[in-house]
Amino acid sequence: MRPTTAWQAMAQRPLSFLTSSWPWRSLAYLTGGVVVGAVAVAVLAAGLAAGLATLVVLIGAVPLVGVVLAATVVAGVERRRLRLVDLDRLPDPHRRAEAPGVRSWVLTRLREQVTWRELVFALVSAAALWWLDLLVLGFCFGVPAVTLASVDGDTWPWTVFGAVVLLASPYTVTSWAGARAAMTRTFLAPRDRELGEELREVRASQSRLLDSFDAERVRIERDLHDGAQQRLVSLGMTLALLRLETPQDSAQAGLLDQAEAQLSTAHRELRALVRGLNPPVLADHGLAAAIEDYAGRFPIPVTVDLRLPERLPRKLETSMYYLINEAMTNIAKHSGARVAQVRGRYHSDLLIFDITDDGRGGVDPQAGGGVTGLADRITALDGRLRVSSPVGGPTLLHVEVPCRFA
Image 1: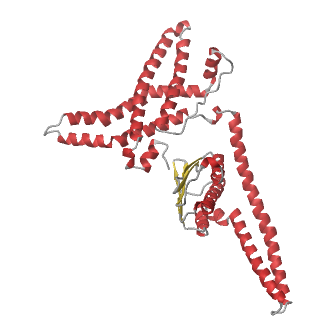
Image 2 (image 1 turned 90 degrees about the horizontal axis):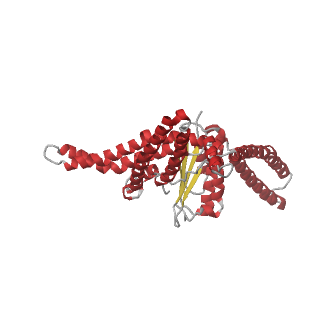
Image 3 (image 1 turned 30 degrees about the horizontal axis):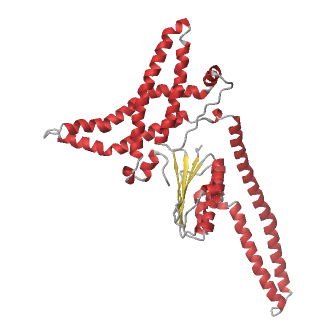
């Protein structure tokens, strides 16, 4: 899977990471942070000073408003800079002005919660973040420069220390760049309440659909178990009674053999269908056991490695079971794979699943089909799906779904 953040690049490819562009992107991100932070300090300090100095004559409100609006500019620059170390675009949460003109635009900005959160971020950035950027860069490159420049017989331990610091600098720089980017995203990512009532209603609708699908699945499972399965059992008993009245060497006995064989097959298929709709092992033992049970009946070997701290919430557990089930079904139908793997972990309030196979690859998420259905399921859970499937394989589905345990 192609990494989308600096942290992912460093974690997934610890050796080839050094020859990738990520260390340079991280270096550019921190260097730009120093520049942007220094400019922000100058602008914010000048605006605050002018505003406080003239506030007694009511003119100071203008510079103070300018400080608030300058913070939105800083936030906009940070959203663009974030693409250096986090490829997921961060949308601008600001609304369009309610009417044309500068006055309407200013009033719209001042009424938005995101504007004040951006002001807090700008103040934090000016007071601390860019200093930390400068400190990290100074440690990674300033310390080695000083120690290597003063090489003599008495200072060789410091020279070795400086060399080690320099060699480790790609990881040090990228680690802080990833942490800074995560903090920036936390401050500047739009909140649900800032995206409007329409988006909240869409998400509520998605949740209701998941609940209705779950309820409908349980109803179908109950109807099949109490209706069709019982009728098949009754039909089997009728055939057994009919066999008692039929001579063993008659033509009717052969037809009864065929009917009983077909009935047994139908009963077995219906039982498998019912078990797939609402598998008891999922309800009794959880997601890991249910996936291992399904993998044991899969037509190709599947390695299951799910390490979850505890039972998931029921709704999420059921959704993830059918999501993985559908992904594995797609593998069996379309990939031509010989082996597959399902790996799952829980980290930082995220469920992370990797579903891989050694099939022919070439899966295009934009072409519709099974992957689109998976993406819709994951979107309904407020998660993310990434697909890596070069022609010739292998194929990797990377799923991230938010999850908080009570």
